[in-house]
Length: 56
Image 1 (cartoon, rainbow, N blue to C red):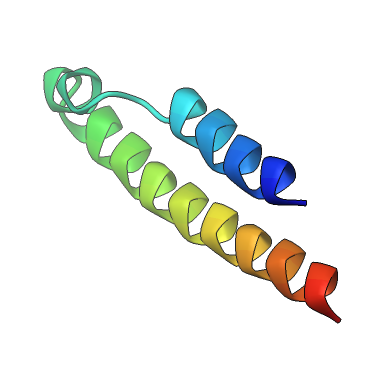
Image 2 (tube, one colour):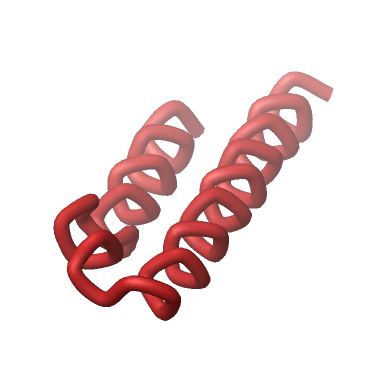
């Protein structure tokens, strides 16, 4: 299960856009940045759920 937790985090970070991408595209970049923050929250919650599921 530790492998799934770390892999989920690694894949999630790999899919998220780099800072220079959304600063370059202006308004579209702001939307992408917001989406990135939401994805980080979701991935964080998924990791916690996997963690608790493993120990329950």
